[in-house]
Length: 264
Image (tube, rainbow, N blue to C red; front, side):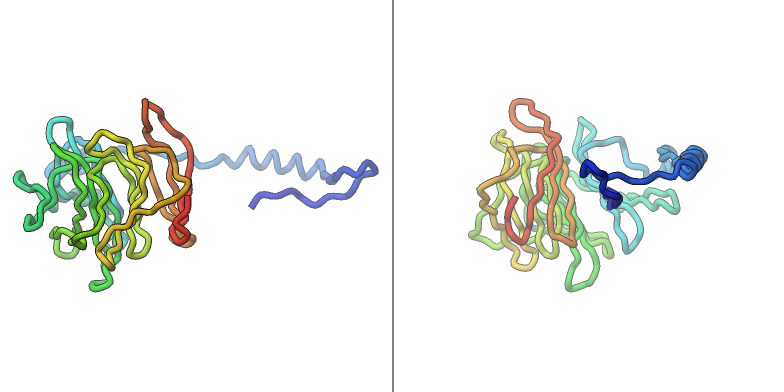
């Protein structure tokens, strides 16, 4: 934590601190010799040729702590959409295609794979039945918009659709939203919906009750999509940064949402 040093009081009431010129000069000399280490970007092109993903954007990547690998899902190359699943082992410097994806997946119940999509969201959820983390994918866009939830089970390399309690309210289909996981609750904010509106609504999906709840607040960030969001699990606060708003507005503001108080 940064703070001011404690000094003596001058005759005019202003604080003063005594400085040792020799010590100060020595510290300056020492700081010049100790250069700050530089951050370095490293290219991973050509690590593997067989299972390397094709060029894409609008995908999601999550780090899986149990297996210490990264999982990539979906995306687009401007020609077609993807529902492939890849893993990347950083220690082995190796890509693996886990699921090639299918052509006929439409996201309806009974299918085995989510529909191809990009600009969806993906979060980890700790499954209380297995004690393992599953990946939850929500929403996104392909030839249509989506508001379905799919669970990817790492241990079995399989997908299953997450059932939603019937009769309740659902968030509209959207893409470019954000999602974070806090306990058993997935918090979704913003996005761009199927009616060409930019969203400013906040929703919570309970993995325990399998239902959606819209959070009504007096104050919220301006409508936006393609923003970012992170969660501080210790304080249960979600932070949102930037995004694309209405009429071409691009934001660089930061908002916080207190999950327990349901308050922006």
